Amino acid sequence: MELDHVVIAVGDLDSAAREFADRHGLDSVEGGRHPTLGTGNRIVPLGDTYLELVTVVDPELASRNPFGRMVGSVRGTGQRPICWVVRTSELDDAARRNELPVTEGSRTTPDGRVIGWRMAGIDRAMAEPSLPFLIEWAPGTPYPGREPTANRWRIAEIRLRGAGERLHAWLGDHAIPIAVEAGEPALTGVVLAAGEETTVIDFDQA
Image (cartoon, rainbow, N blue to C red; front, side):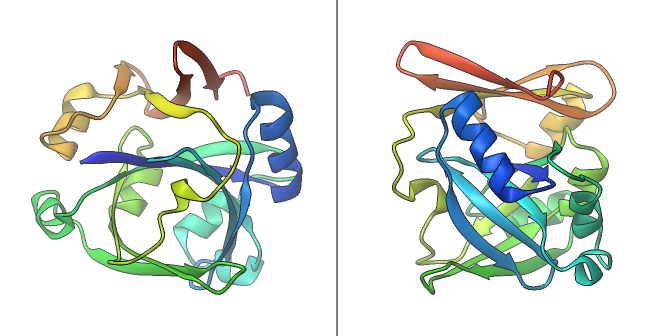
């Protein structure tokens, strides 16, 4: 289990990209569309991890699935963290342990590359945001976090509220940098680091 990315629903991708650049010094790149979800994204590459800015691009299709409906709840220039994601090379084992179905997903980048993955637990993760959903990238898929940008930050810690024991039972053995405090399940912040320097994207203050 390794930290993969954080999903942030936004009302407008261009406005969100400008805010992340101006406020946090984070560049983003165009991602693509999720053809079965009615959403589209921009990627903030951070090396072995990334932030995903996602919005609704097909309201009718998005209204038919929980992920699209959650993303569509953000209006105007608003933003809301909706889930975080861990990757594994043993998705089937982790899914069986947590009694989760495995589904497939993909998107096509603007230059025609296909980004493919399998995933499990996305509905549970959105319902209980202190839990991540699980992803396994398709062989040969170009990793979104390594798209070329000037970004110098990496994710040093995920901050959560929720039940720590439940989270650790969900993940199993891991070395993911997380900090959990008791309370209503929520993704409350992301700590970024560059050398000895740190900055916090504080969703409680967003």
